[in-house]
Length: 236
Image (cartoon, rainbow, N blue to C red; front, side, top):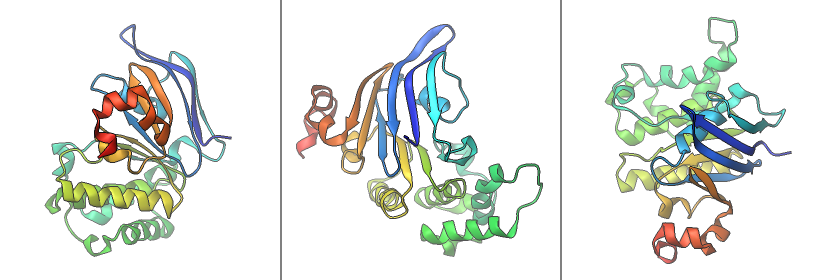
């Protein structure tokens, strides 16, 4: 059974369909990138996968092994978030909130998990730093560590490279590849950097309010839509 799948899903906004005929699945170990122009329905689909928006038709099906509160999520960074006045360890530890249930306090295993996430992403040395004083790349690593505290199965990343310089972007690509391949965590990532993602993603989902492609990256590169969208960059 797939870890997560959409079956003929449609979303509507103010009585108009904004995302139609979405039909795909992601299995353990997959690295799926969702691409498409602005207004294609990517953000709407993300909300649906997170359970924040119900489809008007079709079904979103989770494996019994993947509960709704076990999806690690890294949202788009905003200026308000980047200026958040909290310590790095506090930010990462907050990724354990969904697992607390009615308990109001973090447990030792939650703190150990936060420390482990920091160590896995190579930023344990930043544990006692103030989040807003970090660079953009460091902040994204902290938010990735936070997302890892929420899951052992699936990460959902929404434009994680927005506003970052090329060197930091390349570093984050390598880090996400490590999370996917070495830690065995499936990844769903929204990105406008199609030239970058085709080097790493195992599958591509291309939206244009309707789904126009889903399949392996190698097949996307050979397809007409892939060639048009890449603008001849696939062979660079």
